[in-house]
Length: 177
Ligand code: IMP
Ligand code: MG
Image 1 (cartoon, rainbow, N blue to C red):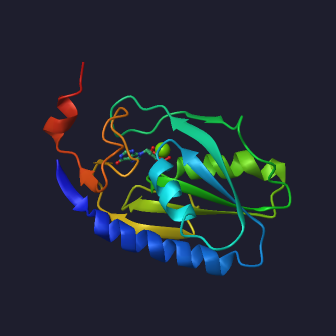
Image 2: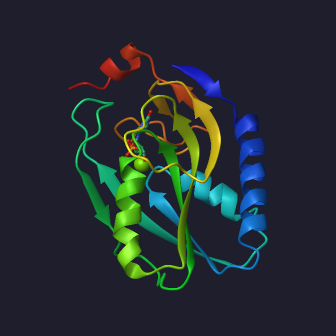
């Protein structure tokens, strides 16, 4: 496992993201929706830097994966969702990989008639996109490696790291039953 993005780089990137969100949503009623569980740390950090009024909610999206890196079926749970009709929704996720999670969430939210739906991600993996949708805010572009930390997990391990690390194949094997 090796460090890819340091805690200090993340701190600076998240501050820039918060400034951009503040600018864009100054006159728009914002509901920031964290895509659980990966965006847990990012949401906690970014909302504390926002100066505009906002509602915060969560939505759960899980794409079932066989092997560590292959995307599968998407399951969405929105039991805790606040009312979004007429409000400007910003989805916040940890990483944009194939894009299927965000695309699925847009489709899920559209019938609830928010005023707009946009998205912000901490990371975007290069060369993996399978959908035309692009996130509106990307803090870091990364190569096509499996990453953990700052909310991102491998089988729910490593979410608590304050930096983003890339996993080596032997780190992955360590958890194979
Ligand atoms: P997408 O639907 O393919 O864009 O995948 C998005 C979701 O897959 C993210 O919210 C993550 O939960 C997970 N994911 C994709 N790549 C990684 C990775 O490198 N490390 C950890 N989780 C990942
Ligand atoms: Mg996730």
